[in-house]
Structure formats: structure tokens, C-alpha cells
Amino acid sequence: MRAGWLAGLLFFCLALFSWPLAASPRVVSLAPFLTDMVVQLDAVDQLVGVLDDGQLPAVLDAVPRVGSHQSLSRELILAQQPDLVLAWTSGNPPELLSALESWGIRVERFDPQRLADIADMTLQLGELLDARVEADILLADYQGQLTALRRPLTDDAPQVFIQLWNDPLYTVSDNQLIGDALEHCGARNVFGSLPILAPQVGRESVLAADPDMIVVLDDGPTDQHPWLRQWQQFPQMRAVRNGQLKVMKGDVLVRPTPQIVQGVRALCSLVEPQAEMRQ
Image (cartoon, rainbow, N blue to C red; front, side):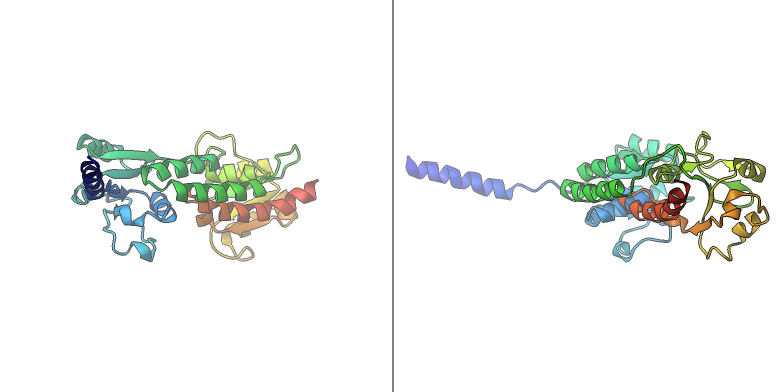
């Protein structure tokens, strides 16, 4: 009887080790920020296709491209035989995503517009990519740094105009990441209440708002930036009078991943001296 029991146990163990492990999903990413998230979660081996924005890291050199922002190819996506497509709700064609789902492919949509949305997305992707430990570590670091950077939004908080483009003038509302980051730094967005994510405004409206600071999201030195030279023609503005015309690189506040905390830190470093001066 004992021999029979041992034989049964041995058979069970052999069968257990012979069972195939659950295969990781074959993943296609249709947005640069989602591709960044897969890299940050150490799940590159699951990627079988990515959207090419011309800025992909070298670690993805061997991953097939499935098109660019304006030329996503459903044929190239299908050729990779994905189990999971990571999609950008407001940046990918909805008809393409619906077609992929109609062919039995799982499509998960993401569109983080707030700092808190990035935390939620990190946890969701950790589950989808079986990278829960990596997601927890990434999230703890992100939230810890954000907590350290948070400043209270007081009644005398500095008023800031964020400039995305010059002609025509484009800014941001508080319904998207840059506006949310500005509030996190303890400053008020002079056009934060507008309903559009990136509204167009008139120069007269900016003059009327009379912000304490103008921050241009672009490359280049502050002293030589042509957009700021135009504002210097209005010395009656508080921002001009007090020398609060600033430039910072916009790309650090664009991609909604936990690494955006570096951009939040840069923005807070611009705003904080102005906030202290108003107290």
C-alpha cells in the first residue's frame, strides 16, 4: 500500500511539473506613455508591437513597429497576434479599437488626465502584465515623491499663466495633467476653469488676468526666448515687472507615467519662490 501511495505521489509531481506555465500575454502598445509604462514595469518581454513616435528607447529596438500616430496599421497589429492591446482613449482611432475587439482581441483603454489617474493606471497595468510587485514599488515611490512636493493652495497663491504655444496662444485648464501639477505645487492656473483641456486664449485675456508668473513650456533659455520677449512689451504686467517670465521643458510634463514627478518637481521649483514672496 505504501509503495502504491508513493507511486501516486510521484506521478502527481511529474504531472505538475509537466504542465505548461501560463503564458504571458502578447502585448501591443498604441501610445508612447503606455510603452513607457511597460518598460518601467520591467515587462518588455511581453511587447510584440509598439507605436513608433521616433523616441523609443534602445531596449525596444527588436520590437516590431505597428505604425505611427497618423498611420496605425491594423494589418501590422493583427500580424503580431496580440492577446492584449494597450490603447489611448483620446489618441487612438476609436473605430480601430472597436475593430480589434470585434476580432476577439482584448483592448484596455487608458487616458490619465490627473496625477491620481497615473497611480490608478500603474496598478491596473501591474495586474494586466502580471507585474504587481513592480507596480507596487513604482507606485510607492511616485506617491512618496508627490507627497513631499505638495504645497497648500492658499488664498494668496501665485497666479500663473502656462503658455503652450504663441501664435495663436494656447494654454491649459485644470482638467489635465499640467494644470493639476500646477495646483499640486500650490499655485493657481489663471485659465484653470476653462472646460477645454488646451484652450486657445487671446493676448488681451492674459493681460486682463495679469498673472504673477508666465511659464512657457518649450526649450531654450529664458532670456532669449522669443515668446517671452513679446510679453516684455507689456511692462505693466506683474509677471514682467517682477521678472517672473520662465521657461521649462514641456516634455517632462507630457507623458503620464510615474516619471512625470520629475516635471512636477521642476514646476514646483519655479513656483515656490514666487509663493514665498507673496506670503
